[in-house]
Length: 497
Image 1: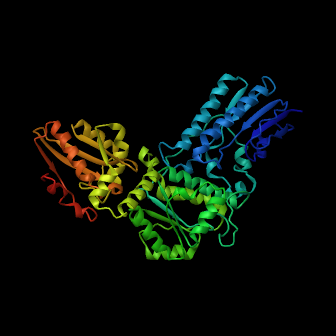
Image 2: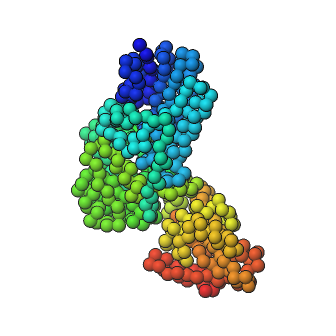
Image 3: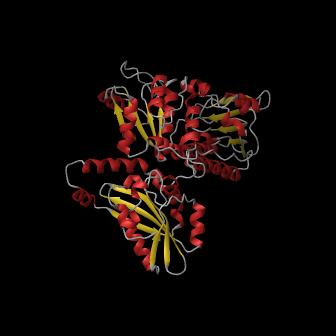
C-alpha cells in the first residue's frame, strides 16, 4: 500500500483527497517535526499562522523553514515531497503596496521555491485563488480548520492570477476607540469572567487583539472607552496574557460617564478631530448614542458572533484604516503621541510658555529635494488641514514633476527632549526664472503646533531659497474653514502675496 505523511500546523485532514485511492495518509501533530516516519511520499502543508502577530511573523516563518530542513534531512532518501506555498491573507493587509505580512509570506514562498530547485524530488503546489476569501471562521476557531475540504482538494501546480489591488479608503482614519467587555475580550470584568486565551470564543477575541496590535504598529492610535473601574482594568491587563497591553493605548477612559464625553476628551487629549475617529462597541445602545451625539465619528455595527471578528476587522481596514503605503513616520506614530502627552504634562506643570519652549530643546531640521521623503510629504499634503496654508493636496508624482521645474521641496523634521516627531512639515517653492520664488505649499502637522515651529520652519526655508538666488519670496494663501486663523502668517513674517 502507498503511504503518505503530511506535516501540518492546522487541521488539514481533507488533503488526503489529493492522493491516489488506497493511499494510507498519516498526519503530524500541529507544528511537530520531531517524528519523520518512513513513507513513499511527503507533503509539507504549513498554512498561514493567523494567530501570529506581525511582530512574530518573521520568526514563526523562519521556524517553519527550519522544521522543513529537518524533515528533508530525515525523510526517506529521494522520496517525493510536495511543498504547499503559503497564501497571504490580503484582506488583513494594513497597506496596499508595502505590507509587511505580504512581504514575509513572499519570502517564505521564495525559500520553498529554492528548496524545490535544490531537491529534485520536491515540488511546490498552490491553493486556489479564492481560498482566503472562503475561510469558514467559525470552523477555524472551533476546530482550527481554516480551509474547506473542497479548496484543499484543488491544490494546483502553479500560482493563480495576481490578486486584485486592495481597496484603500479616500481618507485614512487616525484613531480607533474600543470598548472592553465583549469587544476586546470574552466575558465581563465585573463578573470576573474575562478570557482572551484558550478555546472559542476566547481565541476569536485573541485574533482580534492581534490584528489591532498590527493596526497600532502601522500608525493607527488605539484608545479605550469603557464603563468599568480603572483600577480593575489595570489589574486585568496585568493578570491576563493578551496580545494588547495597556501601554498600547494612547488614551484611556474607564468610568461610568457618557461615552460621547469620553470621545470628546480623547480627541482633545490627542489633538485630533472627531472626524478622524472610529468607535467600536459591542453594545447597540452605546453605538446608537455616539452616532446621535457625535455624527462626525464613524460607528460600524459590531458582529453578533465572535467568529465573525476577522470579517469585521477586514471591513474596518477597507472602510477606514488601510494605507496605500506605510512610511517610517506611520510606524512611529503611537510613540510620537506618547511623547506629545509628556510635553503636555510639562506644559501644565506651571512654568511660563517661553521657559517651556526652552525646556523642550526643540531641534528643527530640513531635507531638500530628497525623493525618499516624497511618500511622507504626500501624506502631509493630503491629510493636514489646520496649518495647511496653500492646500495644494500634492501627490508623490506631483513632487517628482515639481523637481523637473526647478522647485525647492523641503521635508521638515522635529525632535526634542521627549523624542523624535519625525517628518512633520512640508514647504514647496517654485522659481519664475527671474529671482522670484513663490511658496505654493506650506503645511505642518497639528501634532507639533503651538511650539513656534512653523516660524522656525519658514525661516529655515527662506534661508534655503536665498542661498539658491531668491531675490524675492512670495506666497499664496488659500483660505479654508480650518486654516483661516493663520491667514496673516506669511504677512506677519515678511512674506508678501
